[in-house]
Length: 363
Image (cartoon, rainbow, N blue to C red; front, side, top):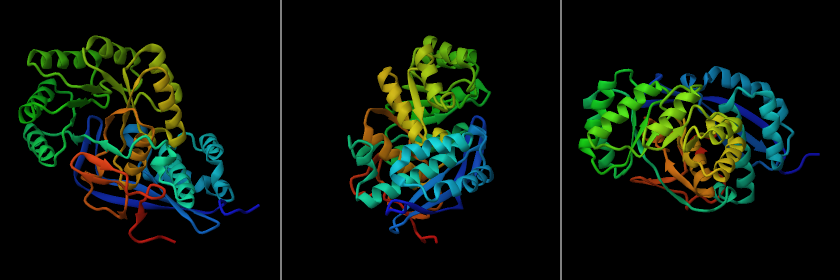
């Protein structure tokens, strides 16, 4: 039976957004965000929007593979009732388990349509704990001079916390870049993000060198490769600073393993790694096990970043906020979303859904 909340159409189209400069991490570089815009339309005409942001060097997904996954499940989504969003998410997990960003895009579009129709902001749907977050800003891989210039730019923007990509394979270069950033911004809390570029020994060596210089980062994110659970445990227990698991946590089972083995003190939740529903379950598990929460993302537009902001602010309790990638994009094909002033992301003006719509509506 068709109701106002029945999905009558699902569409997907390439969303290619150039970056101001290459976005480099330890395992690869991205020059253009090759993402996908997903639109669902309900029987009453309400539209919801979602974004897939595949990043091959992180999870093996490409724009092409995510698009194929979306085409494969379209007929199963059309005719479904958006109010049954958890059942739909379970069906997506069953049919396109390896296409996390595609699942995220569909779940986002469904929840956006549901909450738009209800006249409810997405941050309210997720719990309404807050409407503001304070984000960090990332310095990508590069030279010492580039790190210095980027740190100066971040401070000029009024952003207090800096996240620095490390794991170049050259400990001396990593040390020099960290030292340069600390010199420019000695009071700024500093997050190191290895993206799996270290061994446990090299990560601990770097931390010892930093300690000798009186530099103490507030967090070391994913120092070792995803499957190196022993190495992650070693850095967590011997490094002297909190460690966050990012690539190592792709699903609820991974988060449970972190908790059971005490492999990290923090989990970085990215909706693109697992979808919205699984992210809710991961957050609940981490809270119950007293594991700290971080919210992050791939190279995403204001659409996906606002969804993640609603997720984190609505639930509350996220200590580390890394929702800065719209600042790296040369174009913004959308209107709406969070309002940013310095480091503050404000959601209060969103009246329904995530509040983001394409500048030129499709369909």
